[in-house]
Image 1 (cartoon, rainbow, N blue to C red):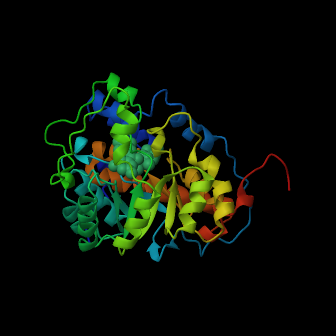
Image 2: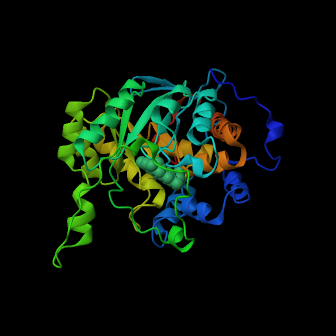
Image 3: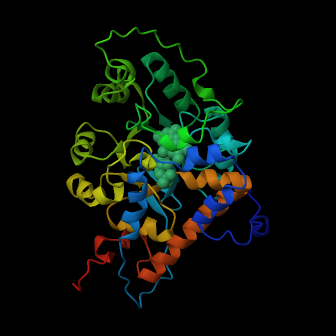
Length: 371
Ligand SMILES: Cc1cc2nc3c(=O)[nH]c(=O)nc-3n(C[C@H](O)[C@H](O)[C@H](O)COP(=O)(O)O)c2cc1C
């Protein structure tokens, strides 16, 4: 077990909430890198909406409940989670700290947190797995070559990862104007090391009538057939990340996908789409009470996690804050950030009079009237 010394004194004293890390991170990383991380797609309408939608939800507490047997632990998809907070797959963590994903894995271990290791990690997936004593999940982007895609899956299986999270919302990179304006490019020494042996893409010559988008980039994008192929070729549970449309959510369930992440990629993919939290109640209703649903986007407070669970999520994922915390204080920063989130969630649960995760139901949300 990796132990991160609980030396609160190593964390700046004014760093008390998750969003404080974003401010502090600016002093530790270059402007271009900060813009790449913080930015959303195009005009950032979706990015802003992610935060706004959570802020617009109000809670309605009940008093005088005995909370002394409370706990934020839960069972989820056959695993025991110490709390409903998962580290979202986030690429290229060496961008902000030399130890990158290894430090994040150590922090996850010390806070008993499931980490989803990105397909675009800057350390080898096997090395990260060795530093991860808590939940190990692997995020997959389909590659042009099915053979190479399968080799990644087999490596993940051999390294002890238990779930495959297949991201489907960024076959195209999206319009990342903020990163472009800041002149962001991957610096030397940071690469998607797990894709090193990827076979070179076949050279395509497009005719004038063809589109660089449809006949170019989209030829690599997966379809539902690829998901079915993956189900046949991997023993791991498959979770699809990036579902927004209720019809897609239903289809995932119908074809036997183990779970979904309702997500707009932190507002970094298509701009002008709603936040995941807004779609969540409808998706939960159509999938039924038992189907595994994860949600992400702007989760920064214990109350955000609470709201997501009340509206139908089983767990949440946290993206950007892990990079900010890593930039400020390495593994210790990520561990502290996770502890702040967990404690805020537990404070919220206690103050709401709902001491277990199972107690957090839709009627804890204030609807603007007494019921
Ligand atoms: C810098 C950065 C890199 C990301 N890399 C990946 C990735 O490699 N794979 C993936 O599925 N999602 C990736 N995401 C999206 C996150 O998994 C997650 O959906 C999103 O960050 C959640 O929103 P939040 O940052 O507001 O918490 C990335 C997000 C950021 C900010």
